[in-house]
Length: 409
Image (tube, rainbow, N blue to C red):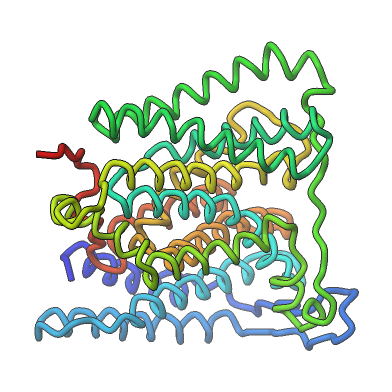
């Protein structure tokens, strides 16, 4: 474990003691576990804010002490420790913020459902990043892939009048950005980080120009069909998990499938073994007959299609039209999610959920009315992003050849 991780454990425990314990707002925090239309109504969950805060603070101090003890005795920290530490801290923040609000109760189901919806483009973006970086190409252009995917979905959906046409257009938009990335990063071996940054700026300027000259003056080109959610009979009636997991749009269901399929393909198939070999030791992969650069190009293109599909969320689900820079930096948070998730599809998925939860929390608490400054709530997802990337779970090792162009001898 690195010193940054130990420092963050200590900082987290100290913040918990001060915030959850000494600065506790007192009173109770109540959570509704069912919505009004549910057949089964679960009782209200009410927690004493001060007692809960002190309990969580003590547990976090114990977790930090365990991390320091593990470092001192040269023991490997168990993988469940950082996960439990982060979960307890999030619960503590949630109880503290809800306790300081003026609402009688907060709907936990609405909070989680909104968090999953906001995390959806982050998940798609991080999966696209995993595909590229596992093969050795740093994908800083996730933001551009999401944004061009959103634009293409709006234009393609408006022209075709079809949701399928909009989603295919979104995937093609992501592929366009990936094609430019592979052209310069793989073929011409330009610095991959610089290429990614330039592509983000290019897509932002291009979509802004086309929006101002094409879409804003012709409403018919910026009126894509809306993607509706549909419930799976029986499963959607399960309390809490039912409405959360089984009442989604097709993009939501595809997200769950994509995470599982990509994890299986990367770690349980010959294709995945070859991709990881290219990302870790391309020269060794080349000696056994694997075409390194072709593998990288294919992976980056597939990743671009996945990220572009995630961009369609903005124009097909969130709002039914495109606007300038509507992704608002989601691609960069997706990049942080894949690092936080250790370049693993499942890890990236849960990291995206954490960032989506932090983003949705500010909206829910703002509506509920709280004495916590709105500026603090607005910066919460970015603070969590910084802490995650800084090394809360220890040093995350990227694929060894990530960012390094390969030249065949």
